[in-house]
Length: 225
Image 1 (cartoon, helix red, strand yellow):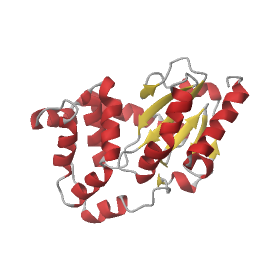
Image 2: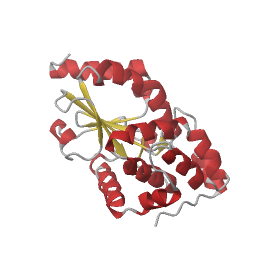
Image 3: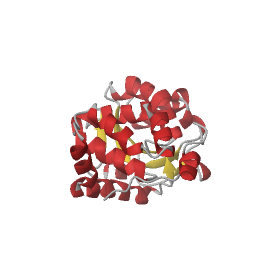
């Protein structure tokens, strides 16, 4: 069973970071770390995909729905990436769950339970209501808040919501996805794997302009601009 418990102290700390500070330890390490570029797709179909399967460049994001930096990226940077690169067939974007706390686990279980075609809709809703989830956590009613979000996406009642949280196949899928982060040395969120190289949420990766510059450089290197 997933226990939705979060102390008031932890809730306050978990949501007090500035939007541009990565959650966890990702912002403390080096900006990049290497792997063979061919390994960017080596984890099979794990994750949730936006864009064309044969796009020349793959970007993987590890993220948490309760992380303010992830919300900042989702709201401020990702729309530009979607418009300029994902919708034009230049980038395949793979979102992978990296839960930082039990609320994240429950939120992701709910998103998966809603169905593959609704995953990103639920994710949008979770980021849009991050502040509400924060206050719900501080006041001990986070389960009710997540349940209300689930209802907007077809999880009709409490029994269905509880079944989502306890579904062993969903829990295993989350564990398998999380396990892929070990290969890349992910320590916080958001973290990006671009063509087999890890990039933390710092420097140019915190702005739409800077992120676009890095994508353009990589596409040029691949001869895919």
